[in-house]
Length: 370
Image (cartoon, rainbow, N blue to C red; front, side, top):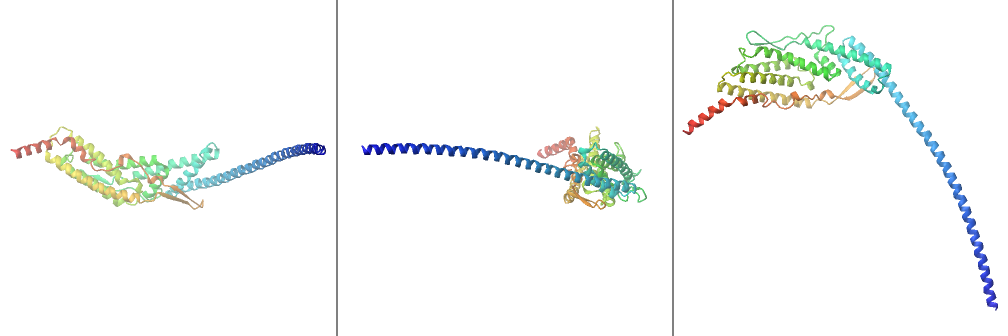
């Protein structure tokens, strides 16, 4: 009985102890839950504080960027205003080399303000630059007209060196180099228009010397044609070797212009219906092939020198006290009319008219077979 009583008593004490442990566990869980809620509230408060700090930092960053953008815009606006003022002075004083450099720099400064074209001051500056650009373009065109024809014709069919009217006087360009710099700065359209006019002007005596049906327009006088262009290229090289920028490719343009006109003339001669001896056609073809090889070697040398030229230009404006390095887009003039090789461009015109030669060769082989 004593053992049973002890066991019951122990079991009662164990149940009471288990109840107390459960109460303690519940109390601890409630306390832990309260602490978790408290920590969550503090975390939310901290997150709110961090978010507010980040918002303020972001606002400061935006303000900093806006301030930097404003300072840059004001600085470039000052540079643009100073450059336009210098352009006004240099163009009025006929300092065309300086004006060309300023136009190049102004073009890049104006491009920065393109999104702000509706600002009155920007509009005024752009209008003034456009007017100055147009005036310089007109003055350059007038200066190029004074070059004249480098190779003239005479009544006897001979050629003589033309005299350039380009002067060094007041109001004129000191050199063609300055005029070319201005055209490069004015823009591609003006430059292409001037180059085309100059090539046309220089090749005009060629059409006058070798008109259709003229004294020296037959296939027998093909040597005279090639002598004429050789003379033109020689005079051009002597007088304007350092005047025209190498990327203008003026000699290449003269050669391709001459070949284009000569192709047309040869087609007219060969298609005229007149009888041409096999000997005359063969000689004209052979001389055309020799001429093509000669000018191709000349063009290869010119291309080699052009590729060695710098592909960047540094425009220095001492009054603005800043160097602006820009890609020299002028060095990459792409013109399909003067691209590629000249080999075959002139001699190929004879291909459809070689039937007499083929017939003669067939007769020759037939006689040999007999």
